[in-house]
Amino acid sequence: MTEKKCPHCGAFLPEEAAFCPRCANVLNRRTLKKPPRHVPARLLRLLGFLCLAAALAAVLWSSLSPKTYEGTGEVTYADSDSSYQLISNVSTDRYYPMAEIPQIAGDQESYRFPLRLYINYRDTGADASGMFLQKVSSCELAIEQPETSRRPVTASQPVPADEFPGVAMVSYIDYSRDSVSPIELVWNLRMANGDTVRIRSTLTVTPTQTYYYDSENADLSDSQALQALIDQLARETRPEDVVKIQLPAVTYTEPLILSGRSFNLTGSRSGGQRTCFTAGIQMRAQKGNQNWISIFDGIDFIGGGSGVGLSTADRVRTENCRFSGWKTAILAYGDTWVNTVGCTFEDNETGLHYNAGGGFGSDTRFTGNTFRGNTTAVLLEKVSADLLMDFSDCLFERNGTDIDNRCDQPVSISQAVFQ
Image (tube, rainbow, N blue to C red; front, side, top):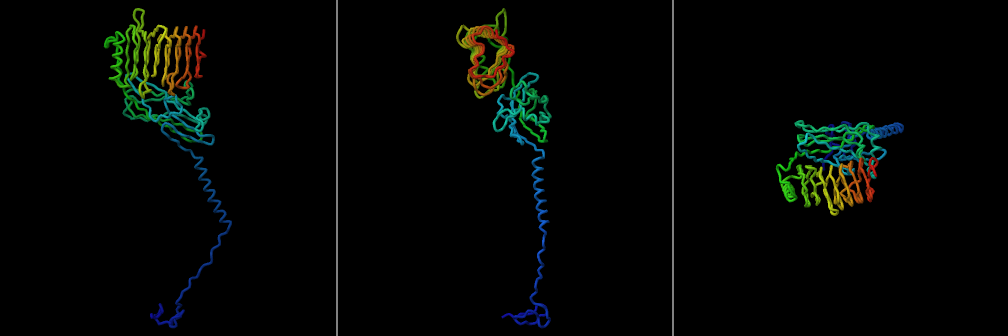
């Protein structure tokens, strides 16, 4: 059994001792506890109020302070009124954001395209341009590009896009084959409430090769020779290359079939005769490619009362051409967009027949054409995009039906002449 000793003097202690009989020191020290401190309820309420006020101030500051909204191709912006979808592209599709914008550049001095800004209500998809632009204090289009570019890309000041229905703002982008990629096109919108909206798209410029052919460097004497050249070029050139063929003033009596790429065909005049096709041209769709367009200029298409002068499932523009004596002068079918400017449609059963889908469009001009003596001048059965087709300065004369608009396509005929 262990004996108990005093921790102060070392004397032996009885088992029950509470103090040392020798030195009188207390063996079991007591800790004096302080009574609890009272905090006034008024002070507690004040502290709680201050904490709540600080939290509300933080929330209010966060909600009212300017914000930056950034995106690639599109941005969603929301305020107390609504939620908006802002889209940047070069398309007529207002719901198609383009993070990448590929463009080609041949040997022209410069090229230009319109960069479009669409503004939709997020919940309905309807055009919200009018409401949203009232909240914008400034709109700019910035360009970020390599300093080594020999021909820097430039952009015009964004303006309301009156010539493009449904587009909120447009900026015209100028570039050349010497513009070094990649190039960042950045919409900068400063809102009246201090917010900033930035939408980026990357422009990539691909230089192309242009091929020129005429009677001096190619056999273009008849249909077979021309078809052989067309087939060779379809095999040996890239889709992004430009092919220009100056046709002689001869008559091609067999159908010409174009496929695999776009072609620019220009007619000639000699001794009162122009380049003429009496069996028509068939333009087949390019697989997976809607970027390139064929241009036919100054060519006569003269039929014998049947057949199709130009049937196309690919993008084509005709300029200064004449179509006469066909069951259908121009037939647009499949997924394509076709437009015609300054052409004559005469004595055909149908002049221009649109039966095309695809959901895209390009040049909306159908201006300066003459439709004379056709059973139906223009037949709009199905059109690929809900764009306003402009028939300004067109002459409709002695047709059975001028415009048969079966699909209720938007058309502008206020500046056309009907006789």
